[in-house]
Length: 91
Image (cartoon, rainbow, N blue to C red; front, side, top):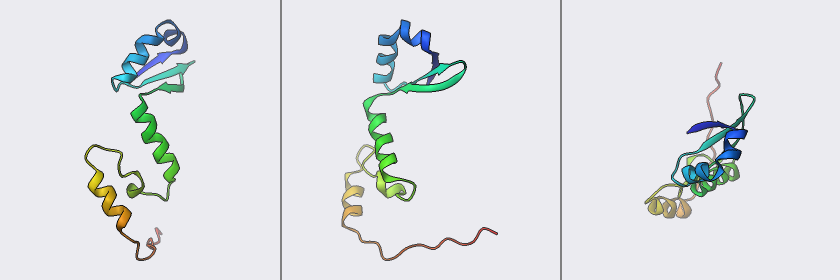
């Protein structure tokens, strides 16, 4: 991952798009603060799946996001939950 200023990205946009296509995200900064990123479509799909799952979704909600995970997806889709989990108090 590389950090680039807005002016750098404006001057070399096609170069940074190519980098994102090849799996190299580009973080765009303004005044030293990250404000946006250029990522490939696979990474965007993963982010969208994580957001849709929400914090309660857990790992099972993102199954299918990696290569050869079809068996796990099938198992998770046919399995039923047997109840909710309780978390111990963290005193």
